[in-house]
Amino acid sequence: MKTGTAAETATQLEAELEKYPEERGEILLEAAQAWRQAGDDDRAIALLTQAVAAGGEDGGNARVELAEVLFDLDRAEEAQTCLDELRNEPLSSPVPYYLAAELLEHRGELQQALTWFDLAAARLSAPEPTGGNAEFGFFTHANHILTARRRVRRALGLPPDEQDESVQSPSDDAPALAQPAPPGEVRVLFWPRAEIPRAHEAWPNLVQHADADTAIADREAANRELSESGIARIVLVPLTTAKLQEFATRTGSDPAAEDTRLACMNEIFEEGGAIDWPPARNERCWCGSGGKYKKCCGRPVSI
Image (cartoon, rainbow, N blue to C red):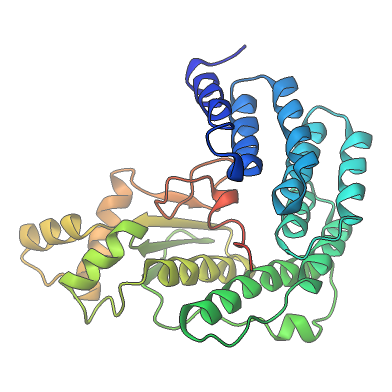
């Protein structure tokens, strides 16, 4: 049965196809996801089929999305055909191959997932040396793919290879505070995306830069490192400048002091403000962007 809000969103998205033809593939993907939420898998399949026909990276992403729908409908043979067709696509972007690997890893098919992570890694190529954010973005997202590949190789009991050893650890100044909680659980205090510039302005010595993309990418990489270290549960606790200022004023403490922030984190946690990491693929991303995790921090951007 269709749910009103999702069906309305899907209909609105389809209405935008003629208005924004240059974004056709992306709109078809978003509309298909909305129809799935509304319970209309047939309409989702129809739109994803159109997106596949459009080709390019969006077409490749649509093949993965279509395979996911078909797997969920117990149509595994058709789903596998979608992935086989993607494998034969001459795409330069690693993103569709990464998404296929993530889908298969989620299904517990680790050997197949590794094959797809290898395909994604093979499509990584260094950018032209333009300097600054472009190069940082490449290394961040290449690291994202190679970290996921290493995770699966470890799960399969394979020894580290050259690409595993090339994975960079997150930077030491990632804007977060982690604290062990119950056994097997770590609580991590972090600034959501919109709060990072505000926190930098309020406490520049505490939050050393205002680049939200860099800070969030570091946090996602650090989350994955924690997960790989054997931590069973990672709980993210979002902190706002208003909350920290209010807490510090109320308790007569220094907002820049680590003890103050840890105490504030525990209060937020007890009030139910924590987020389990990682979110489910179709849930809102933890970073506060408003997008789905699999289309935000849960996936690399185009490289």
